[in-house]
Amino acid sequence: MLTHRNMQANLEQAKAAYAPLFRAGQELVVTALPLYHIFALTVNCLLFIDLGGRNLLITNPRDIPGLVKELAKYPFTALSGVNTLFNALLNNEEFLKLDFSTLRFSVGGGMAVQKAVADKWEQTTGKHLLEGYGLTECAPLVAGNPYDLQHYSGSIGLPVPSTDVRLVNDQGQDAAPGEPGELWVKGPQVMLGYWQRPDATDEVLKDGWLATGDIVTVDEQGFIRIVDRKKDMILVSGFNVYPNEIEDVVSQHAKVLECAAIGVPSEASGETVKICVVKKDPSLTKEELLTHCRRHLTGYKVPKIVEFRDELPKSNVGKILRRELRDEQAKPKAADAA
Image (tube, rainbow, N blue to C red; front, side, top):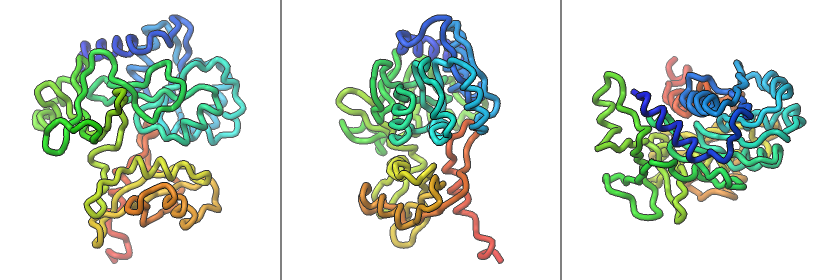
């Protein structure tokens, strides 16, 4: 349950954090996310309307050629989206030919922005991807990189004004400096609770703090780095392995288009890492990919299973759904059931 106060507070927090970026009445933001999604609702709709800006609504962002044709018609100044959208655009030849002279800022959220994507975006458009972090329960903005940051930081930035954060370990205590912990958030944007679900509300709201379920670290300058979703963590022989790290390495291979890492049961180690990959280059082989992984990952983090797929399951905003991949893995194979 998000109140009008929650929404208004988050709108003011966004304006306070990023006011110097905006020119009242002059912005045109590309909205390739459905406006019923909290990211697009607050950032694209409410914020830009409040600024007197315009929205270029993209009804089918999965039609990348169609999206690029629309972009070619308008002098857009801003674009928001998820990592998979930016990646798909960067792999479209016509997009690479567009005029980006009017583009002033690009905002990534909803899932981790991968370094390979962020670097290529900056090379292509001349503007870096400004990564932020939020969740529906916070209306959604919690943190974002400073507007004057010139390059990809690999972090989700700093808390927006009037937002307190803490890191909590598995024992329910504040995590030691430099150690990962679950991100808890307190601020005027935090929801009242889940509609008619008091038990679920009690699980995440604790004395005014919202337990996000995201594991993070904080560096000496206060920048927050997402490690991964707590529920997505893979336990290999007692070691915590986070899919984001695996995916970030795999995505840097030139022949990989998209990927997702999940844990699968293993008699030897409890769980082992499986990587699902969509090829950019059909010549990519399993051994070639694993050699790349061994070069950049500690041994127990290297995937033991590689599956090449035509596509990965995604949400309506383009976020890769690891949950569906895990569910597929858990289903008995038809041959086994026969």
